[in-house]
Length: 266
Image 1 (spheres, one colour):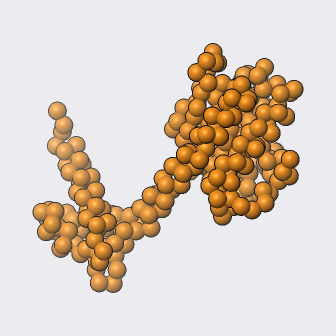
Image 2 (spheres, helix red, strand yellow):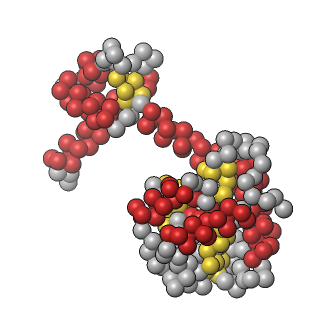
Image 3 (cartoon, one colour):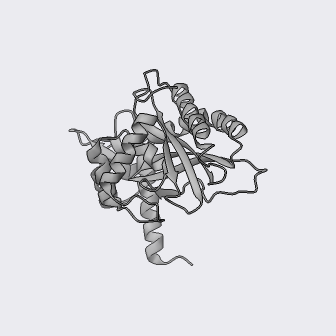
């Protein structure tokens, strides 16, 4: 049975969502009095919720005291739409990659708050090898190929800020734990157009990833694959890396990138 505090919190969340919905439906914006009357809630309660939504930039108040949607909410919607577009554009390329590579899985990730977050994954159902990756899984950028690909084209200062904020935990004996060594590694990724995680996150597992660019030339996602080291050994690595890179380039083209890639195109 829900406690009084839980019911109170649930009611506040419901009211906040109702306020956002009403403001979104209004072309001219709504005042506190409009919202409290239409939602049948005390003006003081509406005022408290509105202040918090405004503080967090979900709403903005104009000089006439009317509330409209804020930039934070719009950016969240835009981000969700972009991720959906990338996933839809990537799926056929991911399926094609699995057939050509004969590897157990392929995945897609985005950078979120200094972590690589997986937003799509396709597995070869016939493979007996299963990788410990799932949609929503968050991993460090310094230990993973997908993370390296996501940050490779960021300014050096931003990369160092992520490393400082998130730390550089040593996952295996091969993990890069020095910011300067990581920057050297990132320079290799910039030149080659793909990144490799050589058992840096998990012993016996090697990963390869490449950045995906949007129409403006910004890296918005990364395309990657992973398997046990005898699948991606030194002999197979160049072939797989080129497949990964070409797949990421193809997705980039599908979502509007028309420029020249910032690395040597084979």
